[in-house]
Image 1: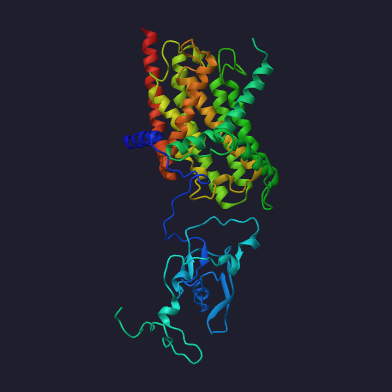
Image 2: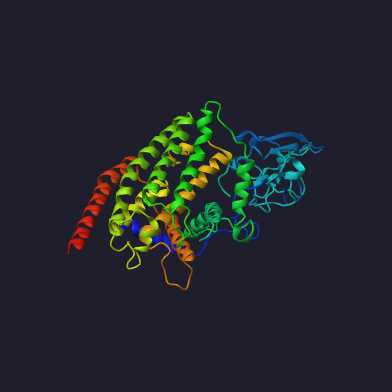
Length: 171
Length: 317
């Protein structure tokens, strides 16, 4: 009985506490940098697409909302012909980001993507590509892995650094 | 003497608006006690949320389940509001401002609040759905058992004032409010009243964590709105009755008119109801019944016995 009265009193005292609501449209909640929101395709430092069309994100996606088709340009560099994410299916789990070997697909701290029309939630490649390196500035997948083109093996070009030795544990 | 129709119209108008306003008030108060803002966007302080809610309820599809007993299903929500509004007939808001000055006011109030059980039972039964039926059964047993000592707790007041007429009860509190000699009776009446209106510590019939929404699971649109409004009217009614019976009704220092005193006291009790909702856990169903029959019922009998004995002793002196 006493505990009931005590809890009533304590709840009553909450009148004088500060309210911790974010008045949303005017006052945005601070989102941490790793907050999983809108998905974007990033570019490497040269401004090229990082995505190499390996389909790992589509395979990792638990709701199968990613679809893409890989092609190659004239240098043999792979890139996605189309890249489609259906955000009405997406659950923002970040598995695509985990699966991506080139850091191309990244989840950004932004959730303001509501639409009146469901069809508008299907993002095509020009909606997803952003002119930015996202969370991994300076990372270039082809610098790490090397790129073999016709008559040239990995790391054989004039000013090209050798690719990372994947057999060695040394940095 | 004011024309009776004016009083009836005024009471209806004020009550229905109070019940609607309580929706907003409760959400704001709960928000205040939970460090939130509550509805504060629509209109000044979010007051238009009531209008928005009402419009939404009107425009919602009023779906009657094909498996329901249609006549009873439609009839049930009307019973809540009707029975509660009928109870208000005997509440004296100020000297002379009372719809029906019955000599058996308290009896009428108890009878009408007992009729409220029908709406729950009929609503739950007509829904033809197990959750609703369970909620209705719980609601019925809870209301009936708490009704018993609700009446018995009131008898202390009747013994002290020597009348069932509410205006006379208020008049006999000129010397001292009955909450002082009848503290136990007041507490029991409060608990019984909360149980009577299924407010939160005792919202067993609606227990949304167990029974979807209890007896009004299948209701939608304005029929659900009727149950909703009925609940808030019930809260207002119990607060008004507590004020009338234990806190001197419209009595108060004369720098404010009697109606204002009544309104202030009633509002205080409505706020107390909301505070209870904000701070109390819901008891288990068997605990609720046990508490009612094994604790409160004997206490109310004891209260009546002691009150009557003291009264007799005072009279015989």
